[in-house]
Length: 253
Image 1 (cartoon, one colour):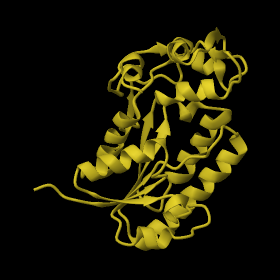
Image 2: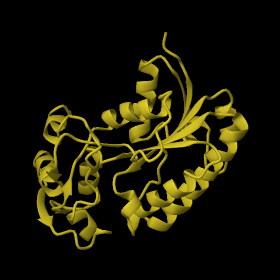
Image 3: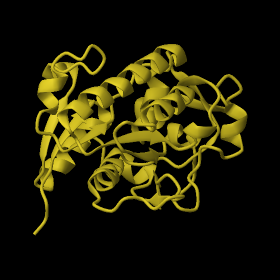
Image 4: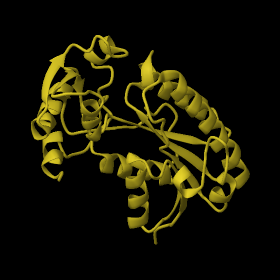
């Protein structure tokens, strides 16, 4: 007989959070969506105690809305402390968070903010499990959205794009596993089935949108040299899950 859990999901209405709620519900668990849209603010604490009452586990997929490093860092510092404080009072068993592959090596930009997020969340007082994921398929569309006009300049850097749904399934598994990770076990990672070039993936989407995509070296991007050297690609222990970007794109309306 399988155990059912009550899981509070921070960032439940976001890109990844919606999938996490779906996966939990499909598996028979009770998902408690936490976002400002549901009256819960993990920064001010509004509604947080009420949302966590009776929760067994917190899954943290809340994110800052843009790439500004300082603002994102402040957001993650505050959210981490509040989830620990309110979660401990509610006696939840643990927090599971979604991070990004290579965040531990980042020195600038949004990934550096995620590095701080891990560093603030991991020490406790609640046990914390981390899943690092590759960039989502949807990130390619964001790159195009950020640029105006009929030409987009996208870094020709290696990536291993992954589906949000696959990340959500793995994050729920990590969060609810009854087995504690063995000491020294690498931080789990999930990525797509094969290495791709970001600019080439963007060309596939750009062709649909009538946008010409030009691959560039990424010199203006934070930690571009690290990215070019493969620092943000999955390690040998990573779980690889489909679909490829092309297969995913073929399913989009």
